[in-house]
Image 1 (cartoon, rainbow, N blue to C red):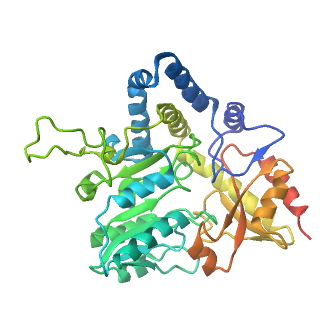
Image 2 (image 1 turned 30 degrees about the vertical axis):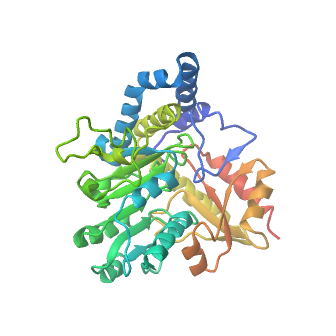
Length: 405
């Protein structure tokens, strides 16, 4: 049922400094807890930098970074040349969208109702400057994006479809592959924000049909903050023009190339990658990626889904508590959103933190379209990991029950 044995979970918890009796982490959707192996990969390299110098240590770690890139590719069913690293999820998404052809007057951008607030702000800003529009794809009754309706919206003015795959304010997981079938048939660029998916749900970029996909390392991958993955489909590279270049993304040609230009961007996803990055953090990300691959994301998914469903049932049984999750119950993520009568999501988070329970809270700015559509101003969100024990679900439910009128 869970995909991972109890002995495995206890071993994983023992290797996670953040797992302890006095503190229970239910904010894995915000940032999860790193393993000792991830911490060691980071600190060992920092010590090497202190001893040899950062540039010299970085040269010695080149193979380790290459292995991290290969692990990321394996996780997504991509090629290593289709993976770029970035310093955060928003940076990766911003690099991807900034590399697309500029919008023009009359152009249209289509987004799902769960689009992340930062993405939405960026798209509206770009559209306003160009005289273009940002439009919302209709939703099914359960809140997921309606791929059939999307097909009816597409015309020759649509320049981009952007989809946040897993909602940040509920357990909803959109049918990203159905959207991909529509965009691929229409030849429209398709970018996926997979921040709440990668690391807890299997990802196959070939099956998704997306052109670019990003995910931060700090969430369900349990990697360090300040890292992110960006997938760029190789056949899409000719449509990608980086907003800026450096000595890694476009090494200077000397003598000039056949086109008599000194500028020749790389022919892989690293044309969107900066030469300036924390090697220590990338090695830590590599350790986190290897752990996910060793455990198997299908097994991780089975355990997280079971725990999240159990938590929903416990919270739903408490008078004064309302589960705010939408979408297909069988495809929901490990993020459980809820409200407590008479309390804001932030107040719930604060009061539970006083009891050693760490949760998240989400307001309108983070998922403005969906929150507004459902008349919500703020929700509390408890996100589980495969590290979570069933007894911790009871502890959280009892604490929430103590908050109700």
